[in-house]
Image 1 (spheres, rainbow, N blue to C red):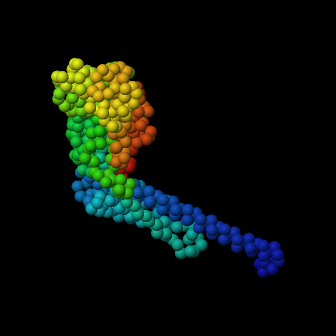
Image 2 (cartoon, rainbow, N blue to C red):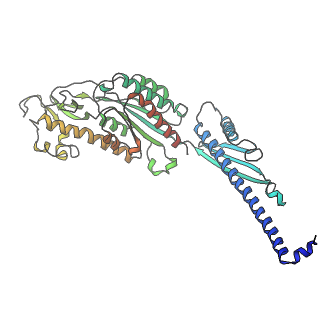
Length: 431
């Protein structure tokens, strides 16, 4: 056997030496690469555990189960440790620290050591690598209005399934009652607000939802108009998106709009009332005006006979109802156009069908669309839920966008849709 010196002295020996050196370097880099890759994996996992713990803490800031900050912080640490147990990816025991500040922001810091193996083969002295991360989350406040169609077509199983769906939705926010505000608007011929926009809402909301019954017309426009006038927290569009109060309207309907609210005159008396269409498709204007603040109640005749509304000395030669809206610059006959603009004050002899009917169909929709646009201009998200043979294009126009419009063929699907919307909101409310 040749001595080592002799082997290395020739060309083959030199190649052998170089190969050994290169191989050693390559193995070293490979080992280091494996170790670094594991460090990145550990960093990602501890970051995920911290984010999850902060998120869980923010969701439970107002949970009465955690009566003190210390209780909440202990819960947050428990979540963090559950998501990153000792020994994960060959680490030691992680150390987490949680804190909730006066504004409700939950911050979590975490630290763990990677127990290195590959790099120690080459005696680099790196037996442990310190890895850590930090994360925070804060619960955004929310203001939510449920606007529910309780018209006569909802009678039977439909109203029961609507109650179940709406009740399920509300109870998703049981632990958020101190942070959020909810309102309930029920609409048929008239519009009522049995629960104003308020905190500690679950009992009142579920109680009033249980009392809903189905009767009357479908006054969608005034329901949305009253949603506009709720006492929403102002100035949200001027704030950064993740600091705004989340403001949401959820409109449910099983039919197309059939009524609108306006000022009328009958027998010389001024009335704040609702004019209604009848028939499907609409073919008449109902002869009686509805009371605007009751689900269904009426107090006049001759709503389908426009004129000057005078009790005596009428230019129309008989009892009529004055539709003041005819002269409105936005919704009047001049804005609507033919054939209604062929009539002039005092509008005696307006043909009920198709002229007055077609005008009223346009009016009920246009007013609803404009109220929805007002909500959206304030930064309020509008969800719509349609049941059965509703006009999907109309409800999609009311909604923030098509992704905010949901449709059910059967009332039994409503609970699932309400739950889907609740899940979306809960994800957005923690940032």
